[in-house]
Image 1: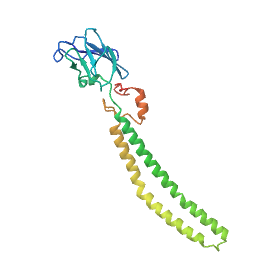
Image 2: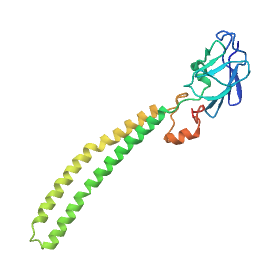
Image 3: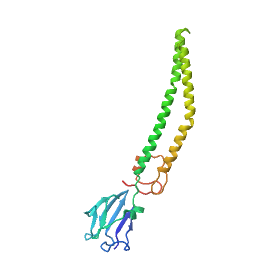
Image 4: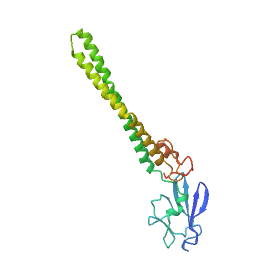
Length: 214
Protein backbone atom coordinates (compact mmCIF):
# COMPACT_ATOMS: atom_id res chain seq x y z
CA UNK A 1 0.00 0.00 0.00
CA UNK A 2 0.98 3.64 -0.26
CA UNK A 3 -1.07 5.88 1.98
CA UNK A 4 -1.41 9.61 2.12
CA UNK A 5 -0.58 11.94 -0.74
CA UNK A 6 0.23 15.33 0.70
CA UNK A 7 0.15 18.54 -1.32
CA UNK A 8 1.94 21.53 0.20
CA UNK A 9 2.22 24.77 -1.75
CA UNK A 10 1.41 22.90 -4.97
CA UNK A 11 4.03 20.17 -4.45
CA UNK A 12 3.00 16.53 -3.96
CA UNK A 13 4.64 14.33 -1.34
CA UNK A 14 3.98 10.67 -0.61
CA UNK A 15 4.03 10.35 3.17
CA UNK A 16 3.15 6.79 4.09
CA UNK A 17 5.17 3.82 2.77
CA UNK A 18 4.53 0.09 2.31
CA UNK A 19 6.69 -0.60 5.37
CA UNK A 20 4.00 0.48 7.83
CA UNK A 21 0.76 0.89 5.86
CA UNK A 22 -1.77 -1.96 5.54
CA UNK A 23 -2.37 -3.46 2.10
CA UNK A 24 -5.97 -2.21 2.16
CA UNK A 25 -4.67 1.29 1.51
CA UNK A 26 -3.94 2.11 -2.11
CA UNK A 27 -0.87 3.90 -3.41
CA UNK A 28 -2.91 7.07 -3.72
CA UNK A 29 -5.68 6.47 -1.22
CA UNK A 30 -6.42 10.09 -0.41
CA UNK A 31 -4.96 13.54 -0.66
CA UNK A 32 -4.39 16.09 2.08
CA UNK A 33 -4.08 19.57 0.60
CA UNK A 34 -2.62 22.41 2.66
CA UNK A 35 -3.28 25.90 1.39
CA UNK A 36 -2.45 28.96 3.50
CA UNK A 37 -2.71 26.92 6.67
CA UNK A 38 -6.09 25.38 5.77
CA UNK A 39 -6.23 21.59 5.33
CA UNK A 40 -8.65 19.52 3.27
CA UNK A 41 -8.74 15.73 2.93
CA UNK A 42 -10.05 14.28 -0.34
CA UNK A 43 -10.74 10.71 -1.44
CA UNK A 44 -8.85 9.76 -4.63
CA UNK A 45 -10.78 6.55 -5.39
CA UNK A 46 -14.47 5.80 -4.86
CA UNK A 47 -13.50 2.27 -3.84
CA UNK A 48 -11.35 3.54 -0.99
CA UNK A 49 -12.56 3.94 2.56
CA UNK A 50 -11.78 7.13 4.41
CA UNK A 51 -13.04 8.21 7.84
CA UNK A 52 -12.83 11.46 9.76
CA UNK A 53 -13.86 11.11 13.40
CA UNK A 54 -15.56 7.82 12.52
CA UNK A 55 -17.62 9.23 9.62
CA UNK A 56 -17.02 8.10 6.04
CA UNK A 57 -16.39 11.12 3.84
CA UNK A 58 -15.34 12.02 0.30
CA UNK A 59 -13.92 15.49 0.97
CA UNK A 60 -13.69 17.44 4.19
CA UNK A 61 -11.80 20.31 5.83
CA UNK A 62 -9.74 18.90 8.71
CA UNK A 63 -7.53 20.01 11.57
CA UNK A 64 -4.90 18.23 13.63
CA UNK A 65 -7.58 17.59 16.25
CA UNK A 66 -9.45 15.32 13.83
CA UNK A 67 -9.06 11.53 13.83
CA UNK A 68 -8.33 10.33 10.27
CA UNK A 69 -8.56 6.60 9.41
CA UNK A 70 -7.90 4.99 6.05
CA UNK A 71 -8.99 1.71 4.46
CA UNK A 72 -11.06 -1.18 5.74
CA UNK A 73 -8.41 -1.72 8.42
CA UNK A 74 -9.12 1.78 9.78
CA UNK A 75 -5.42 2.65 9.63
CA UNK A 76 -5.00 5.70 11.88
CA UNK A 77 -2.99 8.58 10.45
CA UNK A 78 -0.27 9.69 12.85
CA UNK A 79 -0.20 13.49 12.75
CA UNK A 80 3.37 13.47 14.11
CA UNK A 81 4.56 11.89 10.84
CA UNK A 82 3.10 14.83 8.96
CA UNK A 83 4.43 17.46 11.33
CA UNK A 84 7.34 18.59 9.09
CA UNK A 85 4.84 19.41 6.36
CA UNK A 86 1.92 20.74 8.39
CA UNK A 87 1.21 24.37 9.28
CA UNK A 88 2.51 25.41 12.68
CA UNK A 89 0.40 26.34 15.67
CA UNK A 90 1.25 29.83 16.92
CA UNK A 91 -1.83 30.22 19.12
CA UNK A 92 0.24 29.87 22.34
CA UNK A 93 2.07 33.05 21.27
CA UNK A 94 -1.11 35.04 21.92
CA UNK A 95 -0.69 34.42 25.66
CA UNK A 96 2.96 35.52 25.42
CA UNK A 97 2.02 38.75 23.62
CA UNK A 98 -0.89 39.52 25.98
CA UNK A 99 1.35 39.06 29.03
CA UNK A 100 4.10 41.26 27.56
CA UNK A 101 1.62 43.99 26.65
CA UNK A 102 -0.09 43.86 30.07
CA UNK A 103 3.18 44.05 32.00
CA UNK A 104 4.41 46.95 29.86
CA UNK A 105 1.16 48.77 30.51
CA UNK A 106 1.55 48.23 34.27
CA UNK A 107 5.03 49.79 34.18
CA UNK A 108 3.78 52.78 32.18
CA UNK A 109 0.83 53.34 34.52
CA UNK A 110 3.09 53.14 37.55
CA UNK A 111 5.46 55.73 36.07
CA UNK A 112 2.61 58.08 35.15
CA UNK A 113 0.98 57.81 38.57
CA UNK A 114 4.28 58.60 40.22
CA UNK A 115 4.85 61.63 37.98
CA UNK A 116 1.32 62.83 38.67
CA UNK A 117 1.82 62.56 42.43
CA UNK A 118 5.21 64.26 42.22
CA UNK A 119 3.58 67.25 40.55
CA UNK A 120 1.61 67.73 43.77
CA UNK A 121 4.68 69.30 45.40
CA UNK A 122 4.57 72.11 42.83
CA UNK A 123 0.89 72.71 43.54
CA UNK A 124 1.53 72.88 47.29
CA UNK A 125 4.37 75.35 46.74
CA UNK A 126 2.19 77.53 44.50
CA UNK A 127 -0.57 77.50 47.14
CA UNK A 128 1.93 78.55 49.80
CA UNK A 129 3.11 81.46 47.64
CA UNK A 130 -0.49 82.51 47.02
CA UNK A 131 -1.28 82.52 50.75
CA UNK A 132 1.88 84.43 51.50
CA UNK A 133 0.98 87.14 48.96
CA UNK A 134 -2.69 87.26 50.00
CA UNK A 135 -1.87 87.52 53.70
CA UNK A 136 0.91 90.01 53.25
CA UNK A 137 3.13 87.85 55.36
CA UNK A 138 0.70 87.88 58.31
CA UNK A 139 -0.87 84.49 57.50
CA UNK A 140 1.63 81.90 58.71
CA UNK A 141 -0.13 78.99 57.02
CA UNK A 142 2.12 79.40 54.01
CA UNK A 143 5.08 78.38 56.18
CA UNK A 144 3.37 75.09 57.00
CA UNK A 145 2.63 74.51 53.32
CA UNK A 146 6.26 75.24 52.44
CA UNK A 147 7.32 72.68 55.04
CA UNK A 148 4.88 70.10 53.65
CA UNK A 149 6.12 70.78 50.12
CA UNK A 150 9.72 70.23 51.23
CA UNK A 151 8.86 66.97 53.05
CA UNK A 152 6.87 65.65 50.10
CA UNK A 153 9.66 66.62 47.68
CA UNK A 154 12.22 64.77 49.78
CA UNK A 155 9.95 61.70 49.97
CA UNK A 156 9.45 61.65 46.21
CA UNK A 157 13.18 62.16 45.64
CA UNK A 158 13.95 59.11 47.78
CA UNK A 159 11.25 57.09 46.03
CA UNK A 160 12.52 58.16 42.59
CA UNK A 161 16.08 57.27 43.55
CA UNK A 162 15.04 53.80 44.76
CA UNK A 163 12.98 53.15 41.60
CA UNK A 164 15.58 54.58 39.23
CA UNK A 165 17.07 51.12 38.73
CA UNK A 166 14.07 48.92 39.55
CA UNK A 167 11.75 49.93 36.71
CA UNK A 168 14.43 49.89 33.94
CA UNK A 169 15.64 46.53 35.23
CA UNK A 170 12.10 45.15 35.26
CA UNK A 171 11.51 46.44 31.74
CA UNK A 172 14.78 44.84 30.58
CA UNK A 173 13.90 41.48 32.17
CA UNK A 174 10.44 41.63 30.60
CA UNK A 175 11.96 42.34 27.19
CA UNK A 176 14.46 39.46 27.47
CA UNK A 177 11.73 37.03 28.49
CA UNK A 178 9.56 38.22 25.61
CA UNK A 179 12.37 37.69 23.10
CA UNK A 180 12.87 34.15 24.42
CA UNK A 181 9.18 33.20 24.26
CA UNK A 182 7.77 35.12 21.27
CA UNK A 183 9.43 32.92 18.67
CA UNK A 184 8.36 30.78 15.74
CA UNK A 185 7.65 27.22 16.99
CA UNK A 186 9.31 25.84 13.86
CA UNK A 187 12.49 27.86 13.26
CA UNK A 188 12.87 29.58 16.65
CA UNK A 189 13.25 33.11 15.24
CA UNK A 190 12.02 36.01 17.38
CA UNK A 191 8.83 37.41 15.85
CA UNK A 192 9.71 40.99 16.75
CA UNK A 193 7.36 43.47 18.36
CA UNK A 194 4.62 42.70 15.88
CA UNK A 195 1.25 42.31 17.69
CA UNK A 196 -0.11 38.76 17.70
CA UNK A 197 -3.23 39.68 15.70
CA UNK A 198 -1.12 41.14 12.89
CA UNK A 199 1.24 38.17 13.02
CA UNK A 200 -1.67 35.72 12.69
CA UNK A 201 -3.16 37.71 9.81
CA UNK A 202 0.10 37.45 7.86
CA UNK A 203 -0.46 33.70 7.74
CA UNK A 204 3.14 32.50 7.81
CA UNK A 205 6.48 32.94 9.58
CA UNK A 206 8.49 35.77 7.97
CA UNK A 207 11.66 33.66 8.33
CA UNK A 208 10.94 29.99 7.57
CA UNK A 209 7.71 30.75 5.64
CA UNK A 210 5.84 27.95 7.40
CA UNK A 211 2.10 28.58 7.29
CA UNK A 212 0.14 29.08 10.48
CA UNK A 213 -2.87 27.03 11.51
CA UNK A 214 -6.02 29.00 10.70
